[in-house]
Image (tube, rainbow, N blue to C red; front, side):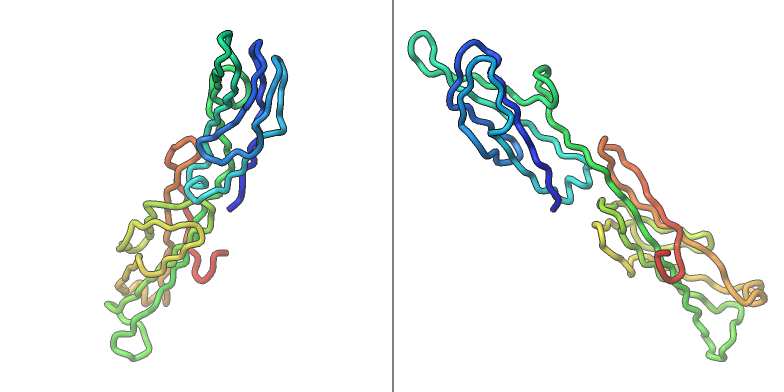
Amino acid sequence: GETIDYTFTVENTGNATLTNITVSDTLVTVTGGPISLAPGAVDNSSFTASYTLTQSDVDNGKVTNQATATGTYTDGNGNAQTTEDLSDNDSNIGDDVTETLFTQNPAIALIKTGTFNDANGDGFAQVGETIDYTFTVENTGNATLTNITVSDTLVTVTGGPISLAPGAVDNSSFTASYTLTQSDVDNGKVTNQATATGTYTDGNGNAQTTEDLSDNDSNI
């Protein structure tokens, strides 16, 4: 939903006056023009365009596109001819595409909750009774996360991997269960922590990871 504003600088680098100069772009609709330019003349205000970011753009960390300037001149036989140039990013050499880079903010949050199962209902813990764990995973960043997994220092977590768009929350894909030992009963508690890990693609097209240690009841 945020935007990129494009400006276009057009120069007549030849020796003939150019008329009906237009600019087109592979990604956006360019407004302005057509214009005429004498040899050596430069225009940097007639043509503009704006592009609205998609989630795919944010996930890629950049937007890449290229424009074309086209002008008309009259040859020695009185016939209209055209000349054109693909846009360059910062010079008149190379016809390189325009890459607009922006900062990604990948982040993941994990809340882990344990529920003691009092199998015989006596209100006390015994060896062999269990704790069920639930895991709430949230994508708290601005990039889509894929291959999200949850691992735990004490138990084997089942479920996943999953993907989450920014702002999305999952509280049902990952579960685990732990069986109490006598040592646990003697300690009066079971303590452990899990880790959520997700993958995203940076602006260079490389896979990167982000992770979070679990919290008991909040993301803080």
